[in-house]
Image (cartoon, rainbow, N blue to C red; front, side, top):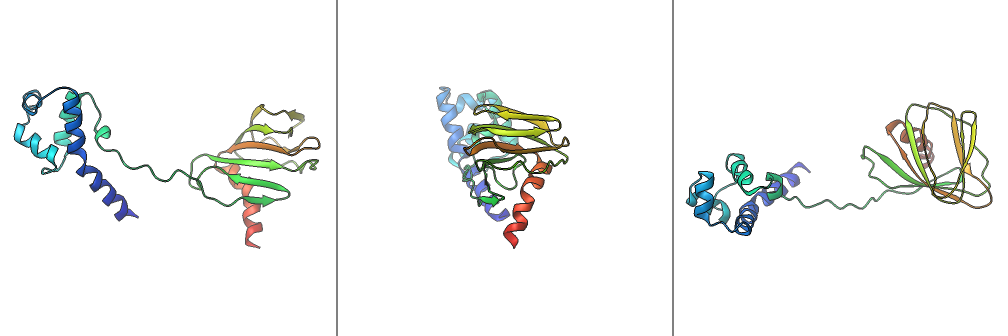
Length: 197
């Protein structure tokens, strides 16, 4: 994996000169003009733009400052495949679809609650949860509060307060739910154990 990343970076560095030339020309500057402004010889700049000289920070920093760009603008890494490919979890009638990679710092799920579901026992744990109701109605029991959230409503709460959720009424409820690490562990670990069975 590290070798692949290093190869990608080397490939990108090979294109720095071409991108530098494009920016210079877009400013209407000749090689000689850029050389004069930067104090770097025209021959060095020519070799850099043609890929015959390896790019270094010592060369790139003054050039990018003059051209009004960042070094990062010259090194554009290919974006990784953004699709999330994780299995859907089924647990206690819930359908839990992960919407973020497993290693993501924010754990996001689309959760579908079955209609007429019984409110589970209240639970509490460290963390926070943010949720948004996509369709249906969601019952949220939070401490002494017993709330019904309609489609388009959102809630945020400290999960140290005893809480439980279920669909309200005769239709399924579908929500987007965002947890921090601790909340994600608590809400998905039972499903993981179930999958191991």
